[in-house]
Image (tube, rainbow, N blue to C red):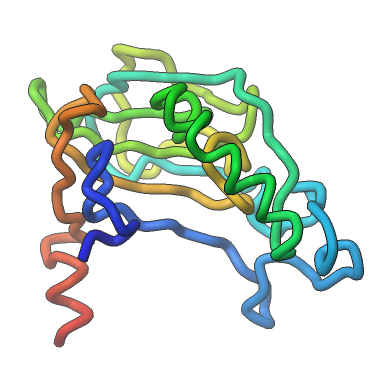
Length: 180
């Protein structure tokens, strides 16, 4: 089963990293959160630095998509879900929102960092990056219900035909580490 329920757009092994507080919550509970959308600024992750997970060269950068309100409420999710098709039709900008793609080699693989905060991208296409270098800040742009980092590795930046590749931490694939 693909991690996001689909193989589309190279997302087969994608993971979402959601920052949480000491109580394991991405944001404090509010009355507003039960009935409507909330500002992304109340979430723990919003604006936190996003670091390059691998060394390589910046292949693509997209910035300028708005950070929209976050949605925990089932009521607030309805209009969001109804806009899903429109976001998908916009392609990478509609789904990934603000994003950075790092090419690990000259022909890939390609690491996508998505849902970044508008105006926070700190790198340019063609720029070499080292592991751990700040590239942007966590946002809520694109196909996102709350501030988080969408991370995926694919074989191409042609998202309509890209195939997802397994992620690895260090030298041991995540799936193998979890099974141990």
